[in-house]
Amino acid sequence: MLPLLAVLIVGAIFNREGAFFEWQTHRAMLREISVHGILACGMTVVIITAGIDLSVGSVLALAAVSFALLSMPLGWSAGLAVPAVLAVGALAGAVNGVLVAVPRIQAFIVTLASMVFARGLAKLLADGKKVTSSFQTADGGFVSVPQPAIFETIDARVLGGHISVVTLIFGCAALLTWLILARLNVGRYLYAVGGNPEAARLAGVPVRATLIFAYAFAGLLAGVAGICQAAQETHGDPETGMGYELDAIAMVVLGGTSLMGGRGGVGLTLVGALTLGYLQKVLSLNAYSTEARLMLTGVIIVAAVLFQRSLRARNQTA
Image (cartoon, rainbow, N blue to C red; front, side):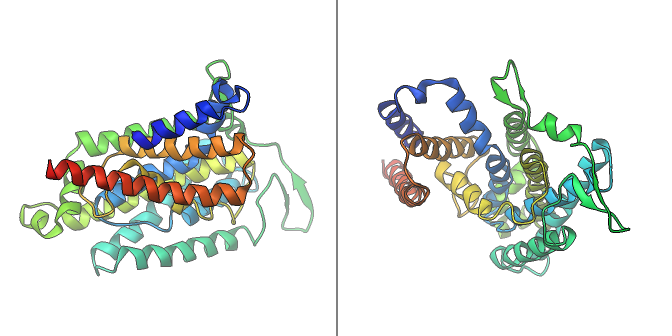
């Protein structure tokens, strides 16, 4: 919490003539972090098992392209397109989980390979270009179709225009993750596997099934994030989501979830997401260049993690 409080204090001091105190600033920040935050919820579950998933940004792109293709050129309804895309994301994650759990290939290697594969598949499906509401037909002509209503719904604002729908979706993803980790047996299994997989196996925990679930869940939420990304951009871009996996990992670690596994939670991830989001917003309000924002963000993330580690060490020796 302290890094978040520090960022909020800095924002209050350097408020850009009161812009930091306006609700539209906070609403925009929440909208901007929502897609990354959805990925971070899935990443939290994977990291709790002492794993990592580098493929979520590419799976997001695959989901965005698939959703755009199904919704516009193929004309599928939202009721069919959304479940199909979620299935694609969950399947991609499940494949990662099987490769990690069964032949015991390192998660870094597995998800690095799937990151490249999913990005290539997204480009193949999109034929190397953005999938929009204007497209070429089989006979060589061009057709323009109306923007699907689901795109406008996801990109809309509700509650009197005070909050974005995508932010509510982020909240639902966080709630679902909390329910899994705190209220279901599989949540206890996830922590057990992350703490000591061999001890968990001897205690009767289905280690392989738990790992497959963790990566499938991360893939499912990457599918959700891809749908939101396509709706916000109004097209499916095979290049979208590059580097998003790093932002998701940063949110999880910045919140305090241990990369060693067995400790953490989605509440901490929410704190990390808000910290990173407000940091970017404060730097943006004060007209820092993109390059400066990237460098400062990297330095502050390392400093925050070192600070949290020192606090944990102090608590353990107390």
